[in-house]
Length: 241
Image (cartoon, rainbow, N blue to C red):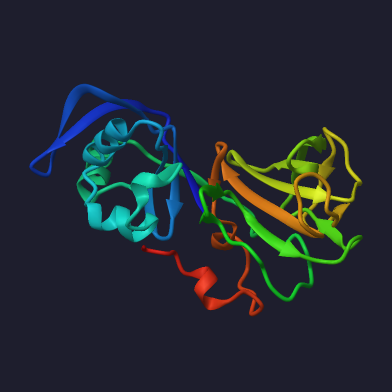
């Protein structure tokens, strides 16, 4: 994943493939994400009308929105809106020069496992904001990337939990641990043991619930973790239904 920084605040809408200045909506594109080969932005879906305005502003075709988010994107908590070629060309005419930093490659937070039991996305009536990796009690949990611990404590639903802040507004979360080995403010290295697997909080068995977030928007961890043959092919594929 690549984070591209545009120190710029603009307001635009599209009309017949062209871009014009407008009062609505006002778009802050200080930080733009490259996701699955597209430059764009993760947008909160709290206001469906505003979401459609973003889609028009970026000149995005619905086909691309569906391709990246699934047919039911309107029901998702966050939606990735890619920029159209016209929008990107507009940015170039404004001499907006992006400078980017690549996020370090992640490692799996549990080194050895035989499956994941729950994937990212809608599950029953709720949205599952991470993946679940079953493992025996006491199995080491490691930091998926270099960073700084911003939270290490017991949370009601998540049990013993660690949050780690990484570069470019990326964070990872590790929950249901039996024991925490780091404290808030600690600097940790990728692969460092930070906790042990458990079943604390609202949990039905020993496992790790693992999340990846960008600016607090939950993202699919499988998009960032290395390929693992123990993950089913169907679990890697974004559901379109």
